[in-house]
Structure formats: C-alpha cells, structure tokens
Length: 162
Image: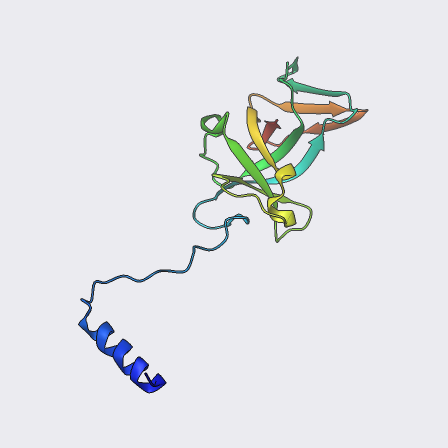
C-alpha cells in the first residue's frame, strides 16, 4: 500500500471514532522536583537558622529555662499570616526554600511533596516540626548560644526542627 493511501486510511478510521475517544497521553511531568505552587503553602519567612552542631544552646521563655526535645535545627521565623496557629503544624513536615528576596532568608513551606536535586528542595532542608515557641509581649523568648544572646521580637516564632 502506498504511503498516501495509509495516511488517508488512518484519517478515515479516526473520523469514525466518537469525539469522547481518548488516546494515550504523555506521562505526567517528573515528580523529582518540588513544585512551589498551590500544593506547597508558604507559612513563614525564616530570618535565622541555627544548627545544633557542638553549640551550647539554651532557650528561655519569660525568664524560665525551656526543656527542648532532640532537634537538628532551630529556625527564627516571622509568620506570613500573623493569625496562623503553628501548633496545628506540630508533627508535620516542613521545607525550607531560599527566599528570592531578601537574600539570606528562607521561606518555610508546609505540604512539602517532593525532593529534587536543586538547592531549593534538598532533603537537608526538609524537617519535622517538633515544637513551636511563640514570642508575645507577655512571654519574651530568648536564645543564648556560646555567649551570643538573641531576643525574639513579639510576633516571631522559634521553630524546633528535627
């Protein structure tokens, strides 16, 4: 059969199919990279990350020493929505993604769905939220580490990440 006849035959067969007929679709896009879209929800901007490695870290709330669970990092953050209750996120995974602006800050996301090879979604930046300490005018929060003292501002939160 000549090539032109094959093409005409294919078109004739296709025209006989009902409009609702489906054909093989290409596979969905790769899931090896996280989609910073509607699936991931930005909840805070992290202004400082503190790793536990060899540091003597003490946290005080209202002048009282706090007992902390095991953690790998502490994150000092400002909520995107001041009304957000971070305690509802306890036990869930969160991801830190470098913020576009300002530099040296991180965006904190919930609903982290993917881990890829770029710096935005490295597995080293995905944690389980273990504890949340909210700084209010009534409950000042202070972190002391190796002679360095950091006092959180009212409205900031200290996130214990493990």
